[in-house]
Length: 403
Image (tube, rainbow, N blue to C red):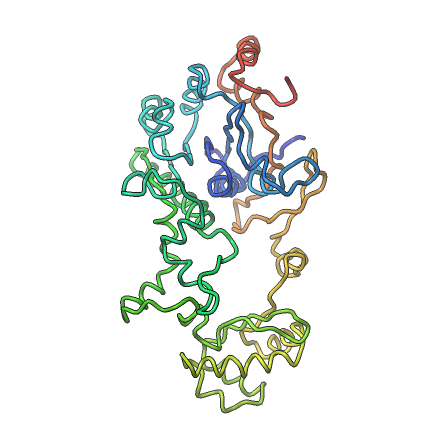
């Protein structure tokens, strides 16, 4: 399937993407959507695990499709000298290498930062790990749940009755891995623009997810109290800031922190006596929460949402995923897009979140099949068809559709 030309503010930037699973691929996909030429490099015999992660759309992993659009695919055996040579040849043409292996693994393979800067002195090399390049946990195994556990996020999610609860989205993977690695890439590019120098950037998902608990840590510094899950003001401690069940079993999100909005809400509810109890905590908040919960059970979610919208107060519906993709605001913002996939047909995906007035980004193609662009990429860096045929016979590379 023919790709659209790259467009967007990062047009002309080339990124070699050695990441796998969720954090790195999501970040590099967003960079690709913004115009970067992202070459996804996978092992010939051990491609990105996400390709095999259920559920599937026909024969393709829905998760892989979701985080790998707009990229090109090179299937390469990096455990061979020729594979390493191809990679280092690509480094000469690249601006950024981004990887997601434990510390030292790629150095041992001959493709780490020190080897890369030998062939391109100003290369930017971004490494995403769970715990960073140094420290007591540096070489430990981990996943999102482990990082948010260490970060204190789990201990602040849930309630006293339930104990810690998983927050739903993978916060460390997305906020700590994908988003922070994007910031790392763009910051290092700007630094190189000013100084001419490349650098190594250490992105530890544990470090990078800690800013999510900035307010919780500030509360602890002020009180030295380890509150139970759900007892911090914005994590369940305030009755005016929470989720309530409605008459139809659906839910409403209430975020009435401003006193002027709280007054409007109390008057709408016919409970002026609540006005002075706006920001109460503890037992008073529990009493308030029970009274507010009883109120919301008298009407459906959409009835409450419509009433709140008329009054311009911060009460909104809690949408199911089936409703999210049909939401008129998200559709107007082009945050649910559709494109053709060669195997799956028309697929709906989350759109590009950043809106630029001049250099408008866009997805330029669906997720690639393994080795889909191997031939064209090798030709770009000077390999002849005869050399490519030899590399294929020696299983140094894989070209999609060939055995």
